[in-house]
Length: 104
Image (tube, rainbow, N blue to C red; front, side, top):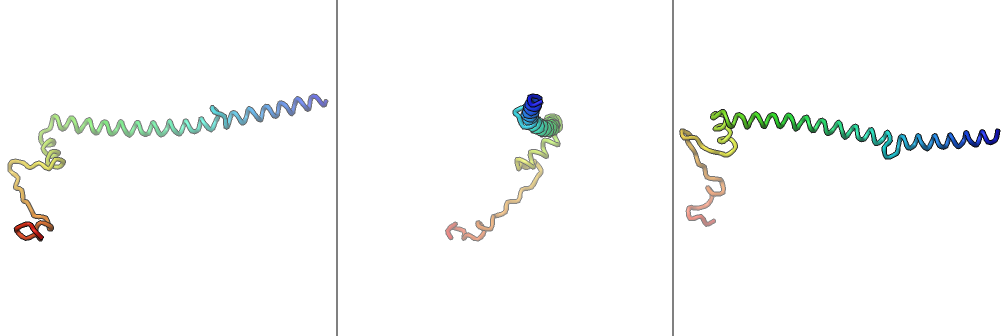
């Protein structure tokens, strides 16, 4: 009877050790949860990058095939002026306050 209790206690301790390894071990449940979160984050990032890639591909296609879109982008982003545009140049407030010789 005594040895049966000793064996039972040893098995309970072994079971506790194995359960702790299952939960907190290097390949346990906690690591599994962490990996699942990382996987979900990476999937979301991949989907966002795929969407951005599709938008950029459409912009490239439009720049190659649509001259009106190309002209609009060049004017907006590169500050180019069209043939029939009128350009007004204004002096900045610092330049306007200086006398004509440029000395303060």
